[in-house]
Image 1 (spheres, rainbow, N blue to C red):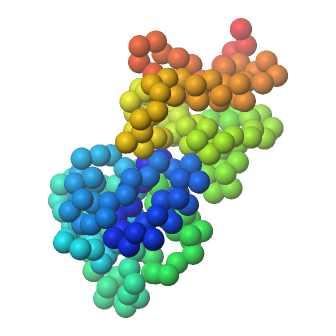
Image 2: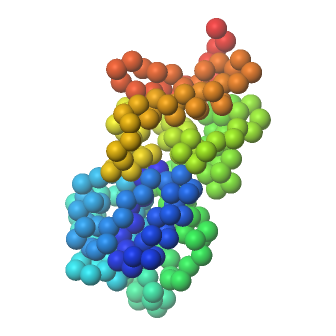
Image 3: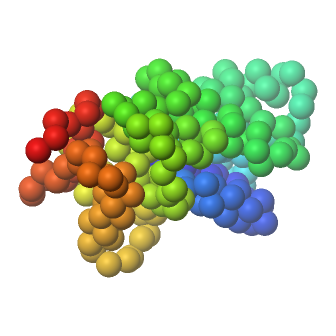
Length: 228
C-alpha cells in the first residue's frame, strides 16, 4: 500500500515514514502544502497523512483542492488542536479522519488500516482468498491454516495481490503501490519477490496461487487451483 505523508516537521516526518516502511508500506513524503498537493494530484495513493499546520498551503486547503481535483484517497488529518471547531473544519474540508498530536504510532496505523478498508470501496478487516488469509493488523498470513512467514516487503506484495485477486496487475502497478516512486533498484525486483512468495506459499506441493501472465503481469488466482 502506498501512503503520502505531508508533514513539515522533519523529525516527525522521518519517524512516521520509518515506522510505516517497517510495516511494509511504500511511503512518499512532502514537506509543505504545495508539494503535498502536487504529489497527491499526480500520483495514486491508498491513503494520505496530512498535517494541518503547513507552510504555504495549510492542510485544510490541500485537502479541499485534492477533493476539487477528484482525488478521493482517504485523508487522515494530523492536528495539534483538539478543539471541536478545528476537527469540524478538517472534516468539512474533505478529510476522512483526524488524529491529535502527540499520538501513539499504533493508533495512526490502526486508523490508516480502517480508512484503507472502507475507501474507496468497502474492504474486509481480514483478507481471504481461497485458502489464503492475510490479517493486516496482526501482520499474519496463513495458507490452509498453516502460518506463512513473510518479510515486510513480501507481506506488502501479497496484500496488494490479494486486494486485486482475480485481476491481472502489471509490474508498473505493483511497483507504484509496493515500492517507492524513487526506487532505483534492479528492474527484475518484482519477479524476484514473486519468486520468494511462490516458494513460501506453494510448499508441500500445493497448487500455485500466483500466475504469470506473459507480457502483462501477475494474477492471484481467486479460487483454489486444481492440482495438475
